[in-house]
Image (cartoon, rainbow, N blue to C red; front, top):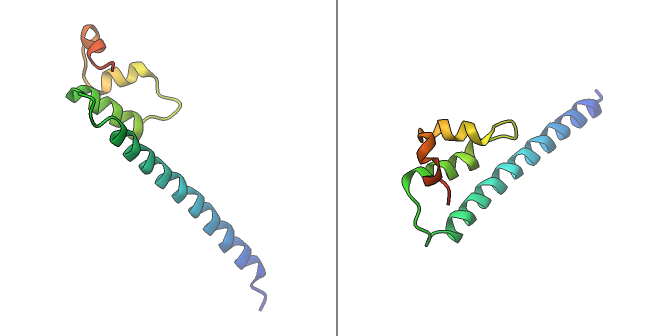
Length: 83
């Protein structure tokens, strides 16, 4: 029985999963370093929520205006979210 094709398929799957895991770990480490770097900066609740949303939920297709709606900030108070 020749298992070469199955072994190639399995190793390719393993490689893809390792690459995906590496990206997730890099994101988590980046977020932890960011919060460590700005731990002395006074941020309000909406600013913290917006920053976490940028790290966790945003993709390239999202727009900043969507973030305004996501943190329930009235348009006239949006400057309060800005750091």
